[in-house]
Length: 249
Image 1 (cartoon, helix red, strand yellow):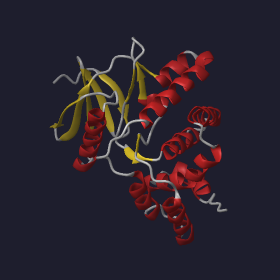
Image 2 (cartoon, rainbow, N blue to C red):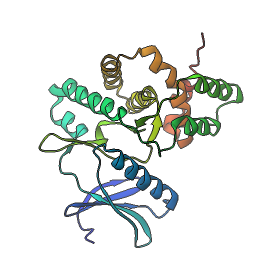
Image 3 (cartoon, helix red, strand yellow):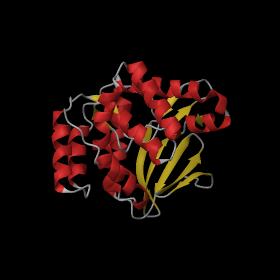
């Protein structure tokens, strides 16, 4: 296995290319359960028929867990937006179309996001009253079983030279409500300090899916609370403010 060509270095992994294979080598402290969750999620989504990389194998390289995946030739949507800023709205239209297409798939073996979010709210570190309100709100929201990515951002979408789209990085995948997935994308843009893209994305999502903005907004506090478990000091103040935006009729 050739690890001489490094594609990217991330906080918890290094990514290499070896011919038509992509090799994601995790850091030493990356758990076996986490790498197996990502491999399982990817396999389930692949079997559901949604276009993703094929998983070749899970193994250890020099004591580190690694995933060997199909290499997809192309550029990420984030790269295309950076290279062609005048086409930003067109790229965001494409992004939302891909997201809505994804939500049309079913992957019943994935964990349901309601269960995952209930668990994360409990671990968020928020006060008991806020946790109770968020648990209650989540319990009252519709429970769907649509394929959700959990980190649907332009850098996780690859557009091939023949204009096919592939979505990568499925560690956070669940089945659940599409508007919760949209709320997470919105908050990811906001956390990156990109309010303009956050608003453009959500405007297009609501228009194309015929979803009321107010309905997506009901998920914002829940998603913010679930993000708090990452315990990122740079994000905590922002997410805590969003997690306390709890309104009831």
